[in-house]
Length: 136
Image 1 (cartoon, rainbow, N blue to C red):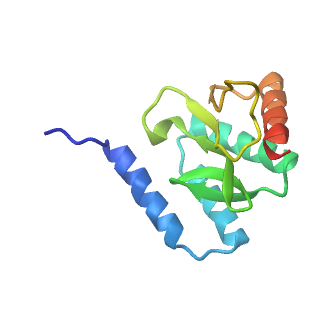
Image 2 (image 1 turned 45 degrees about the vertical axis):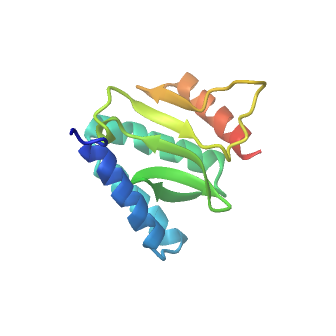
């Protein structure tokens, strides 16, 4: 019988379990996020660095922490937004995602994740807008 989960998915689950055991303070969590970004492939790292700067500039009260081994930003210990590099699950694009604690509700259906292939002025504006709405 074939494995249900890929080795990348299993690694993410192990990362999540390890994250729950950590007793880090805010500075240690922020440092860990920076280490995750530095470990990414160059193209993903460039996007992750830009996303980090945009999120922290837009919502400095959000706490950077890892989430399933990915960079994420928390409010009241709940994930609001995360960035998944393409290398994480060998996908063709990076993903900017929002959890259900983000205030993005709009009618009966709304987007909670976005493919990111470049950070342009337009993309930056959209990310800032989403983050502002998510934390409102």
